[in-house]
Length: 225
Image 1 (cartoon, rainbow, N blue to C red):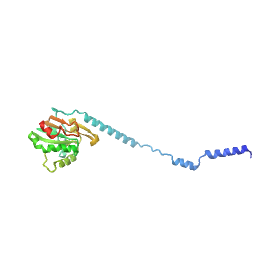
Image 2: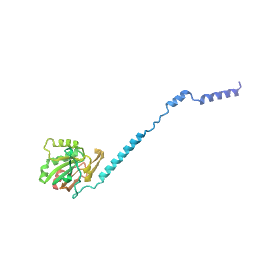
Image 3: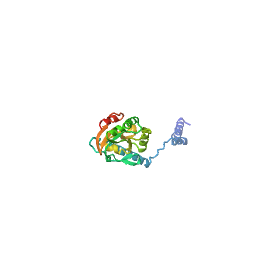
Image 4: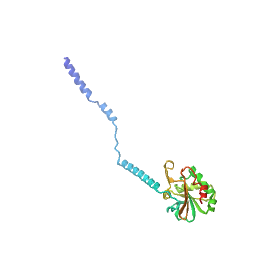
């Protein structure tokens, strides 16, 4: 066999054996090929629902904070909130005489729990100034407000009353919505006190910092009566 014949035979053999992948090679490639799962239509729908819900929540909060803060001379908002239990409602605009709303961001929070006792302890002093009732109001449900009342009253006769603005309707009506997303997870009432008589506001004291009790302290409110 000549040298040329030998080279041609070798070239042909290499071409046949090197260019055709073996069955084992095909199996390895197939086994490592990633499988792409198609995204179901339901996933797209769920994402749309979540996005729409978030947009609605943002829009609702934007509407809440856009209301003008209440001031002396304004009418008390004509809204109902819960008091005592899930069935009882109260509309502060319908009350007669002199009454006080003590607004707190959240039941059981340390600052709120230090604000309310002053009104409990000096309830008789407020009565001597012609106050009919004092209402502690927070954006909490009625179960939480009743549990908080039991803790603060600690067996003493009930003096001040506790009301639940669970849907923040009063907070919106007063224009005193606090952006408490970082602390409480949603909108709450700003800390303050509102004195009103026969449906008309006579004094409003809103804390510049929700973490402090200064102008809405019981002693300070007594001074303006």
